[in-house]
Every structure is written in C-alpha cells, then in structure tokens.
Length: 241
Image 1 (cartoon, rainbow, N blue to C red):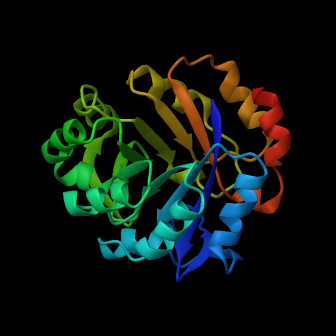
Image 2: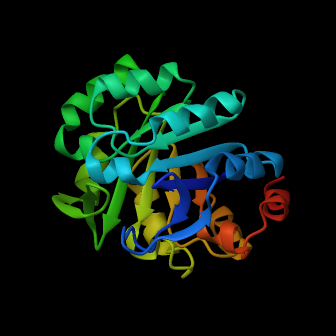
Image 3: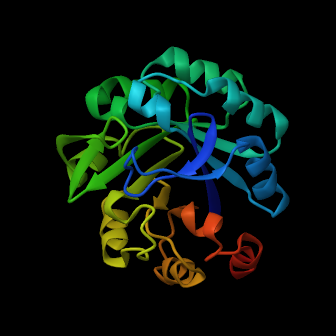
C-alpha cells in the first residue's frame, strides 16, 4: 500500500475542501509546483492532483499547471482528475506526461464509453467512485446520481482500469478517521486495485487499513492530514517499509 499526497487546485492555488464544498476552501500554498516538490522530496511515490475548477466547469481549467508539474517530475507517477469528460482530454494528459487519468462524472453518465476507452488506454484510466450516503455523486460532488455503490462498481469490474478510487465524501477533509467497515464492504464488492480517500487523519488510520489485509488495496490518498501535520509523510512511510 502506498501513500498518495493530494494536491487540489482552485484558482491556481493548492487548497483543501471539507466534504467537497467549493465555498469552504483552505489555502495551503500559492504555489502548487512548490508543494509538489515538497511531497517528492519527502519520499512520495505518487501524486494525486485534482482540478477542482475543472470538476465544476466540466472541462480542464488547470491543465497547463498540471503539465508543468508532470514535466518537472517525469519519474513521479501522477494521477489527475477533474473535468475529464472526453477522449481528447484523456489523450492530451497522457501525452503530457500524466501517468493515470481519473474519470468520475463521465463514468457515471457514459459508463459504456468509459469502459470501451479503458481498453484503448489499458491501465491508464482510473474510475472515481465518490459516495455520499451510499449514492454515487458527480459534477465535483455537487450532484447526486441514482446509482448505488454496488451497481456502479459491478459495471466496471471487467474494465481495463489501473485502479478504482473510493472516496467517502462525508469524511473527506473532516479529520474524522477512516470508516473501516465501509472500506471493508467496498473492498468485498470489487477485485480491481483499490485506492481509498476520505477521513485519513493520523498514522493510526494507516495502520488500521494495513490491518485489514486487503490484497488489492493499492493505496490511500492523504490531503488535509499532511498539510496540517497530523500525519508526517516521512514517518508514515516508515510504517509501510
């Protein structure tokens, strides 16, 4: 299992939200490239970058900034989401040095199209399953679909995805700790490589996830806990050694 520092972009800055609320940003850096450098220097194996403005607008807004980060660290795996709704955007990001492209809203609205694209770009697409009260959310978490989590996961089980990202929206950015029973249930519903997000607050959360012994639990995305210091990246990486 790897720790994946999150860099969320809003108005050109590195921010964190609470439960995805766009009106509740905390700015942690005016220079996202500098923040990326910090996580690389401290030993991060991968970066999770989300174009929050892109998720809201339905199109990439910070693609130039994301490209700068990808090209600055060509040996760092980078996964990017936010506003990715067509193949042209997927192709552009892949050509610009991004390792993995995350789709959420598009996967909810056009699942057959996304599944077909996963076969064209094998192991380059990730599907984001962002859940609030058992229902999959979309459009930067501002809307709710009619899909339950299990139905959504089952559809993509035979897709050529790099990973599935599961986010517990109600815990995201809230420093409440991970929902172990919820994660265990999600893991039982898919055999795809799984990345967890939402609620990670201290190193004990990392240890709880490890204790689950889920073979396909690939990584955990950590945001606010790293920025506020309740998790020290260098220290928590020692737990995983």
